[in-house]
Image (cartoon, rainbow over all chains, first blue to last red):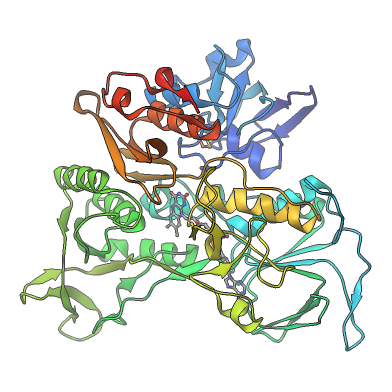
Length: 106
Length: 436
Ligand SMILES: Cc1cc2nc3c(=O)[nH]c(=O)nc-3n(C[C@H](O)[C@H](O)[C@H](O)COP(=O)(O)OP(=O)(O)OC[C@H]3O[C@@H](n4cnc5c(N)ncnc54)[C@H](O)[C@@H]3O)c2cc1C
Ligand code: FES
């Protein structure tokens, strides 16, 4: 089972088992993980699914395209080098991802 | 913000028949109803919540129905808002497939909702998140087999099931849903004609420059778009069994094995009318999502709300049909049900994906008096900025997320983006915002 470990801005950790093919955003939202809003439901339009990815997990992830890159300039909490939009991060069977959610998404 | 607690701790009401009526009944289990339940639990609302809807599906997100779901790139499970476990853990009773047809009410606001099935749902407080339904086409032949709408999951499933037999499709209506669906069908290899009654595309929601941009862009991508289209009737196949085309007023027939009607929606105001609530293009609510009885909340597509844009003139009203509005409006309503009075937060925004055109709209164009167009064809970017008395109030941005974000953030902070400087498409909008 792919697993995503969500740490919120206060440091609370939630380990959520997901399904291969689902995005990190979907895994969070369906299970009510706070800290991810995802207004647009994953269509890369809202930038309210921002996460910081732990550095050693970054190379598990697909490259970001130009749209995601530009959207990241509009996040509520400023982007960092390890910022991604979680709706663009699809889980595979052996994903084991550590991400931190920002203080706010809107 | 005042904190007089009216609902969360009030004693259960007893109806005139003696039954005890507790909790909140939310009628309509979609974007607004789901958000209302979620926000209430986040705020610590302790009473029982029943989230009731007439559809047979778990609550799901609609936007993909005309886009990724129609194209088959996203499955139905991805559209579901929350897992069943989430609702159970949060003490929200989800009721599917029950259509409320009548509501009996006591003077204190409590009452019983009666479903078509005969089932009864007692409540102490009531929320109407009943949304809107597709406007029906009134034209000879409109009831033929093969004439479809796209408002809910059943519509989308029906549409998908028919596609194998469709070579040519006509989309009636050049608004968001029509153009999204037309683009999806075209991508799936169908020949698509869009018939728009009005003189321009998306006329209700965007200005002329954006309409023109979309017209040219869609024609370039292969859609046959007819503006000012007048139709005589929908033409049946020879054996009369199904639709075969659309006859225009010059007598020509556009052949189609599928006619998708996307001519707007009608708010579901019937229950509100029956309750005697003020209704005018939706259920009229105040800044706190309260209907005219001062206790029922009405949220989302069904609500006629005061223009929520900061600085908008007093008394200006609007009914918004968007995910963002459903979410933000539900939050306002959740506070009201907790006895708190909060204003609408954030800047209204909207998105629409049509082929490779990603439209993002920030703000509301209501009352604009001038525009600035920023166009960079080399990079495929296009934005229109809308101004009212020299202040920016909205922007339509196509494949231009930086512009969208800059305008949305400026509006949120009460800042302006001066029109003269913004006219140069090479200028990064974020760098020219001014305070006040
Ligand atoms: C195909 C499509 C694409 C869209 N794309 C976008 C987009 O890209 N971006 C965007 O921002 N918005 C989009 N929208 C709009 C967005 O989905 C709506 O604004 C949103 O769903 C409104 O939510 P709501 O809960 O207020 O109303 P609705 O979603 O209409 O939900 C109301 C619910 O109440 C139920 N109901 C009504 N009457 C009764 C009754 N008497 N008893 C029981 N149940 C009842 C209805 O069946 C329905 O399930 C799209 C909509 C559609 C249909
Ligand atoms: S969910 Fe909207 S951009 Fe990711």
